Image (tube, rainbow over all chains, first blue to last red; front, top):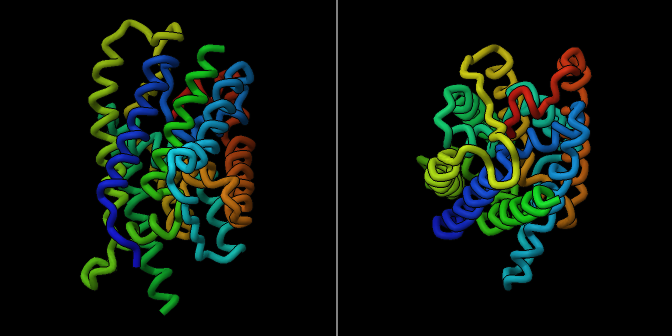
Length: 140
Length: 155
C-alpha cells in the first residue's frame, strides 16, 4: 500500500532527535509533544511562552520543508469523523494519564533508558498494532 | 526570550522532521502499525527507521548534553525522575495506543499537519485537547501545587 522509504524516514528521524537534543541542551526540557501541550492546562503559566513557541514551530515545520523544495506533504485520513473524534479524545486523555506520547516516551524517554518509557512504548505500540489489525479485518 | 527562540527553532526542526519522514500522514503510520499485514507483503517498516534514527541521535546527544552542570539557557535540567511502573502508566499507554491505532495520529504529527487542509486534523486536535482537559479536571486539579511540567514532564 505504502512504499517503504528508509532514507527519508532516517533523515526525518535524525531531525526529530536533533530537535530533542537542542531543546535539552539550551532549555533543559524534554521534547515530548503531549507534555508540552498538556502543560498549557497546568498551573505552569510562566511556562506558556516556550510551549507555544514550540507548537508554532511544529506547525511551521511542513512549510519549511516546502521552501526547501519538497512538495506539499500528503495527509490521508481514512477514519470517519466520529472515529476521529473518539481517537482524539483517547489520544489526549491517554497521553496525559501515562505522561507521554511517541516523542516523550518513544524517543526522549527511551534515550534516557527510562523503564517507565520502555513499558509505555511497548504497551502503546502493541495496542495500536492490535487495533489496526482488528479494524482492517472488520473492513474486510 | 532566548528560550522561546530556541523552542521555536527546535519545534520547527521537529515538525520538518515529521514532514520529511511522512509521519504527518496517518495512512503512512497505519501502514507501519499494520504489522499483521507483513506475511502478505503489505507492511511498511518506515516508522521503525524514524524512531531508530531519532533514538540513536537522542541517545548520543543527551550523553553529551547531560554532562553539563546545567542547560545553556536554564538553571537546571527538567528531567523526569520517576522509575515506577504504575497503573496510570499502563492504562494511559493502552488508551493512547487505542486512539493512535484508530486514526493514525499521535500528538506531534497531528499538530504539525494542523494547517495542511484536512478538516479531520482540526477535529482530531480539538478532541485531543478536550481529552487532555478531561484528564486535567479528573486527575490533575488536586495537585495544583505542582505544575504538570514539574511533576513528570514528558510528551
